[in-house]
Length: 282
Ligand code: ARG
Image: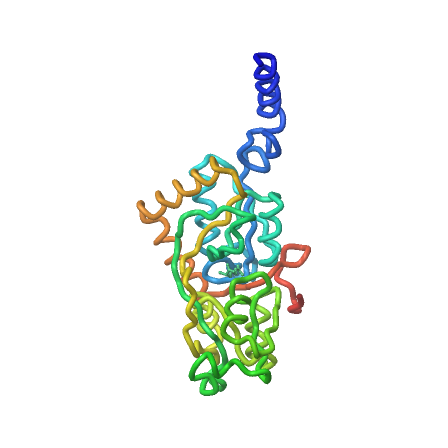
């Protein structure tokens, strides 16, 4: 018996010394000394690119500011990896990143593949369309017709909302919210399901858009996706969120993000040279 215990202890020690049993050398994050975070910057004011006078993009938004705050709190260097939204889900599920900060709703369907932090923001869900089309949709049931093409982001809870509210409609899944907005503006889509805070931000840039309807969703808070089973990381993330709420940082991040989002922005992914793509493409 003693021999077994000694063996188990030895194995545990080796794990701790070399591999952290799957994670980086310190066992806490995927890369030692770094906090690796996936995001999807098509989502102002959560995450987007802010452009300076020369058009040079810098990642911005309150998710990005909060990510830096958490990294600082933990004494880690922040590495943010921008990607499409469905990529943030799969990278976190396969534990290639420590966190996903992309305006996640605490969707119960995700609970098997990630842990959720405490809620750090709340908004609601909206049905967005052009002002011109708004009168067609006095209720959500009016959008539930096969002749309507309605946009949702791939992998998002909005897909579920569309299935629930408008199952008869043609539900079109696109990888970027930016593309959904472009297609609503061009008339290719009749409407779309989008987060209220995000819809309101796009409406500032495109006054021809409007929120035709509020859509109900029982989980209206936003959370950080945390690598499943990494309790030490989850604890630190929640501590940092609590501190950011308490010391006023979070409120400041949200205010700053809203100001920046109403100035010069780009939403989507940069080209290989790290610049804003000249032609919008998927
Ligand atoms: N809140 C929704 C969800 O969790 C949509 C999030 C989309 N985020 C983004 N950065 N595009 O499914």
